[in-house]
Image (cartoon, rainbow, N blue to C red; front, side, top):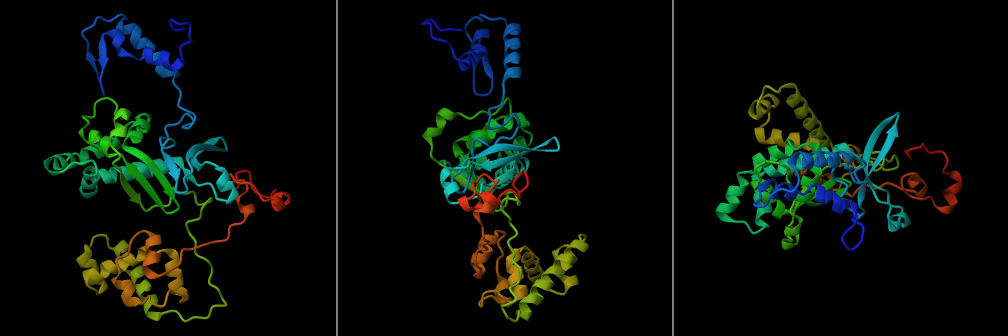
Length: 382
């Protein structure tokens, strides 16, 4: 097909013409069409058949690899590398991963490529976004960045639960466009996930009636630079590529005496958790009475079970920082984020040696001296 001047028409132009309802006497709106005042020039049956044929022949972009995974276009790691969808075949079964792009600078610095199971990361993203929509405090904070206050803010905050339900019931084939509208960007870090919400579309999604398909208005995006970050303390990087369990064996050369009171505190925390697991018929007061402690102290003991493994190991070995004692640990507000815990109690961030050879087969290149010794790995780089 060519235009009047003899120039060929692009496939995208043809596709848009075939999907334009103006030819059947209708005007396209945001989420539906409206009857126009002009006469149709194509019969409805012919137009419907053309739309059905175009939909049948439409293929997912290469970033989605023909799947319903929906994050590839807005997913980055915390080093600034775009994460795209990749597939591994194991015994005829495809396993999809989001993988960091192999940027030249990351090769030079021997930076590992992050890998995250696509289905699991998709599920975490949807769960985090749904939890945000039902959290009235965070939802109001996000809407305030868009300049909403007073009665209008209160009205929109009422719709959070309904919006979360609509998100959960969105068909997988429609999630890519919806998520791309609501989120500007997602960043993956070793122990956290950050979702940057676009408030201008968040407001529209809250007011959406649920009819048709939610489509972002990209023309409106430049009119607002408002953003709201949702921080999710979760490790989504594949363990084979970036271990989240970083406890090292005890150094036999270090002779220290463990703090007896701290070890008793950790042991009591384990006992409190066991009591909680065994007596789900009891409330906090009943559990505390059976344990012989006050409800407040019992709840603090339960929180101690969420300490980072390297902190617990240091207490067992007696290598914890000098200022950490039973009173300090028992009275602290324990965050779920292990990095914050380490900073609170004076622990260093865990580290491990990484050699260039360990990175070969994972999107990196070996050093010149390693080229003759890199043949012993498995096919997938593990």
